Structure formats: structure tokens, C-alpha cells
Image (cartoon, rainbow, N blue to C red; front, side, top):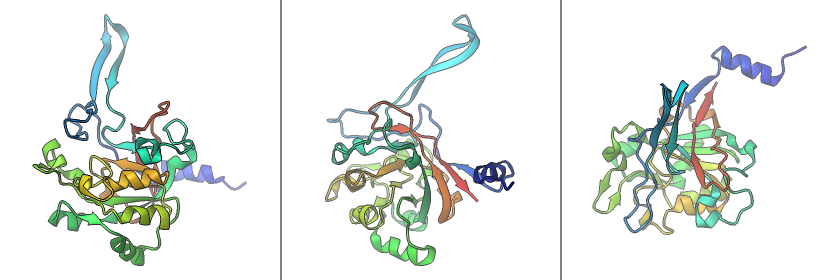
Length: 259
């Protein structure tokens, strides 16, 4: 009897034919988090508190309490995260259909442009040009913007703050409706601390990725790493957030399967 698809898949992973690439930052106190103006409530940074470590508090076990905001480190954005997505059914981390947590990825390499301009914005024209070499972006797939921003060391370089705010690359306001409506993607992923560009508060609309993606019932992935290890097409992403009741998002161990 021929092996089932799942048996073949398992054998390919065990045999190394399919590689698993971790796209997630480590979670620790130094993990950069979103910086908001002081008039807005801040997110907690990640913190770990030891409960016991094979001692009088628990002689045979080691464990910790941890605390952080939902959108800390590499994380998943659910539609309910933004006001434009608040009225969709099944729009929270505990109600999104689980089949949506596995989807193919398109990786658009903008690293050369970003090396010259930290405020580089990816436009529909860039995407159409990319499609001429790699094929049309399929409905239900992720679009990931590779910038190599994750290679920056330390929170100061990662946030790249100036007097007028953060300067980080991201999607142009016109790209978001193009991807959401004309390509029907499942979501957008980036290497920055959030899915929008650093100066996105100045755009029309402000924060167009959050506004448009979540307003179209789509998802977001932020603070990704290792996008340089993925092919332009062919990787499969596994992106389940924690099953937080009414959660707007969650830290996420994003994995890419590459054949």
C-alpha cells in the first residue's frame, strides 16, 4: 500500500528533505517592543519570574511565570487587534479557524533598497515586477517583506528612533488594499517591531497595514527573522498564536517548511 501523504511528509522531515526554519526572535527582557507616544498606554516588556528551581519552592521541578503584552517579539496580529477588524466573526486568537494557521509564503527581498533607505516602502509596482519573475501571488498566501532589519543589534538600532519617531521600512499605503483585495492574501509579515512602517502614523490612512489588513479580515506577523533563508516562493508557514480567549494577538513561534 502506498504511503499516505502525511507519512511521506513525516519521512521528508525526518530525512531532512524538508527543512524547518525558525522565523522567531527569542523572548527575553531585551526583546524590542513597540514604542508608543507617552499619551497612550504602553505594552509590558517581556519578563520572567522564577517559581522554583529544584529547591525548597519545588524540589523536583523548575518553572517560571512570565508576563508580556500580546504583541511582543515575533507575534501574530488577529483582525480584532485594530478597530477596522473588530466586527468580524471569529476574529480573535481563540476563534480563528485553525486551518488558517498553515499557509504558503511569498518572500519579497527588499534588503538592497532598505540598506540605502531605512524608510523604504514597498509598492504595488514592486510587487508586480516581482511577480514577473516568480509568478502571481496566490490567494490565501502570506506576503513577507524581507529587509534584513532583524539583523540589527540592540533595541536602539532596531527601533531607529529620531525626533519625528521611528524610521523602519514597510508597506506603502497603496500596497495594502492591493494585496488584500486584488491578491486576497491571508496576511502580511515584516521584520520590524510592527507590520507598518515606522513613519506610518503620518500616512493616509494612518497605519495602513493595520487599518487595511485587519479591516479586510487578514492577519499580521511582526518581528520575523531569518527571511533571508527562505526562497521567494515555496515555503509553508506555520503560525498558530496562543489560544487566548478574546486575544488580539500573541507571541508566536513562526516556523517555515522549505523543501
